[in-house]
Image (cartoon, helix red, strand yellow):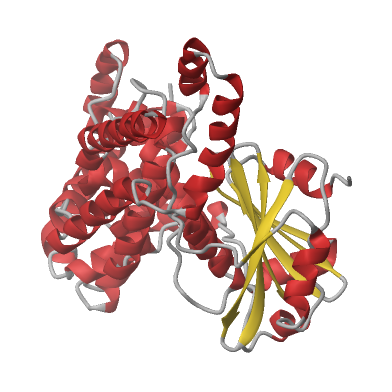
Length: 198
Length: 276
């Protein structure tokens, strides 16, 4: 008499937990996949990362505070997995020379000040691969905000929650990130001979 | 205000995040400053360019199906009958229920007996990295797939069992607040591994132990370089794969031990370093 009660109520609990998870967490799979794809630049790595994230999220589902920002919670788990998997495998920590980037940006800015040039002539010939690589070359912090804002359309507030920093920092990183990207794209365009040397 | 002060306002305006208060000053400035209005157009077109070339894609259907299937498997894992783990946690409560006897007491105990935590999945690649193996085995323990071959809370019994099976000294001391449950010997790349289990209340602490020299050598078993160097330098290495989940690695004589449990680092460390 005791065991059936025990196992039945627990089975019910498990089923409702599963339903809850499916209703609340699973809908965010696309955004998570896109972020993983852009961060790793590799569909297989992205697949592993998304799978791992959902498994962990399911495990720790009772740690999620119902009603709070589910996407930020999921992203945090993914970010944790990403850091454990990828950052730790590199030998040196990512060193970013912001001064250098700023200087580079300043030179580029004066080289191509005509916005129309940008789109058609210079960048028009770039392949999607080039754009993806340019994005991948950005330091992680800048890459993250550019992905979440420009590809995924998250608001500053949402990005700030995910990255766990003030809204001002999001804006500042976006500003510099986009400029860095433009610098890289210009670089690629130059290499491919789309930039006239006059 | 100077041009540099308007730079980030430009970013905000492009993203529709500019406060109403700042809109007029910005428009004003852009009307009078060719440099900044060029900057505006440059940034706006960069964002548009990115949006066009790196589109939001849908999760590949195969991946989606795989994840859905994995989640369903997780959900049903606990319902599996005959799991030794279920018996480990349920057995005790049966005894206390019988001991009390009154119907009311029975109901109260039923309400108080919290089911063990939901099953977990530490999917890691199946390779010679002993940290990955530790996580995978922990998962195996929790899902009932990996069960002890010898069940005893006496370290001597366990050591006798392992003596003939492994080429290192198995570390399984008595602790104050965690009880030895049992162990089983397994192999990876022909290297013997000791799997030892402790229990603290509703938590399982899983220990993966093997020959340290073999791991340091790195051929049949290994540790990632950053983990190995930290272990050699400080005697410990930790990982926290999630909230309330800790992996701890340490060396005892010529044995390397990896412990995993669903608890904070402080708690795990306290339980593992407490003598009798």
